View 1 (cartoon, rainbow, N blue to C red):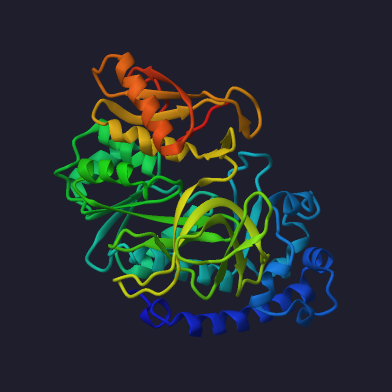
View 2 (cartoon, one colour):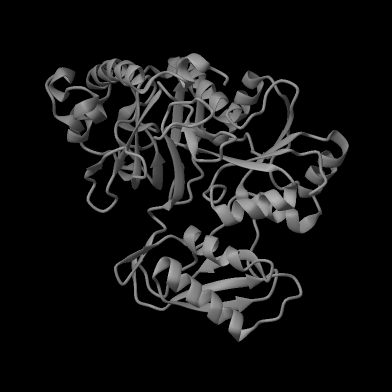
Length: 425
């Protein structure tokens, strides 16, 4: 462990520490944040209680934050510090509209790097490892995670995306022991070269769901000849908040002490217990943030929680991300995540490549069956009606949803050196 005093701390002790931090953070919000003073409508922070009462407070939606931003207030009304106190400003990609700007004080940045370092160190990398990363530092939050590798003490080789030829050359010339990239890019590289004999012994994936899917993980591990673990962050809250250990049983909360996690029902917003095996939408609250803290922020990530003891000794809750609630479809009352479709289809390897696209016929979440699914065949495999039928029946048996399976030739579905789309309208 990078920080055993924190990572192995008892649940009860951590809860007590988090409760104290939360009360201080809440008082800070009431004093400094025009956004939350209006939203909470409380006279004093004491009126809101402690962590045990947090579910009584309203959730924070991304659109709410975006609505307070304008040319005069690029950070919105939740900014709590003077502009001169900011040391770094990141931005989101702006795929759903104008980019959102995320300001940080020196203390905020330090907490981000500390949590990210714990998350990545959980995968087993440390001094003596040579780690090749494919994150673009640029303007995006993922760039902050690069600082974490220096904290861990590895030899860091930053390459960025869009340079697959250079990456393959670096693998051969520099012989890194670990590589950090998205699951999609890890799979794409296996189509470009035989990497089973490379020097890489650990593949750390992040940026999208997939690394925790049993079938997809097995495919990556066989192709790379390496162990695959995953990490996850949420841009508005922090990079690499969660990281998986060698047990491969979910991602531990590396940002322990900095972030409080909750579960809610994604449809109603009602709180759900953070119990072993529970599923729901992940909601996060800053505990020690200063620039623009967030309270009960809806991440739109649908996760399953593990709180049972882990053999690695870390005591923080673990999660596996099942997919984005934004991408979830409802077919005759059944919730369907595109990532779950990919996982089932992956069982038909090696006759399929593992790439899929779900193509809803109508706008919105609710769809009528059969749900169209394009499944890419493996290289040199011809379409087969019997195979399409077997995939369709397997999807119905596992996900209880009727599909219309279209088999397409290898290479027909678009690849990505960063994140892949699993749904196309």
